[in-house]
Length: 288
Ligand code: BTN
Image (cartoon, rainbow, N blue to C red; front, side, top):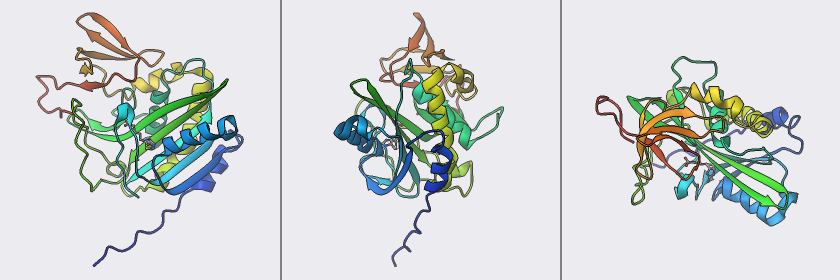
């Protein structure tokens, strides 16, 4: 017995285009059945055609064969389980710091609107969305921001992967010297029955708005919204260079503030990884 063929996904490309095109001239939506990586593809297009390929585009791949995460990690996904897309557009903020945080805030607020006192979706600096609380956390989504220049023209590719259905496939083991990855979460545990197409419809237009606002005003207007969902605030953390401290939120520029034995440290480099360390008294926290 073979499993029945999966029904085709009905992508809301037109509805997204109608919501976004009036505020982002030249915007298009493209859905492809398979790609190596939506980020890689948009970077390839930009490098091949330069500023001519600069029109804003939302590129969705039903399946990625070489999805990429931060710090050289891979991003595993399968058709219908995971939403994978990239938004590519020209952008000229005065300061780029905090863009991945602004993207995370937008996605979290679209998926869990309102102002919940104890949000289920929280943000783990600098690019993760986590589901749950300290007694059970999983990774709901990740953001990969990449930029390219062509003369004066600056192009940004914002890649987003969201785990929508619980994944059947096992996790890839962590690379040598890397901490084990947090188990993937699933949006359906928060929003039962939601699928990848409905998820895209919820997040796409607000994401464009958030990126445009970031281009104009930078990270500062997002700072308080980040604080409301900060997964690390007040927690003992360890940086990839071994430094330990307690996370104290983020500054106006999106830098992570960590109180260490040597004083307050501002972490700006996205090449630094940060993970919570289980406090000796909090036996229920899950290591990640
Ligand atoms: C991370 O958690 O390190 C970031 C993961 C980003 C994954 C998305 S999926 C769509 C886009 N294409 C990629 O190859 N990566 C991003």
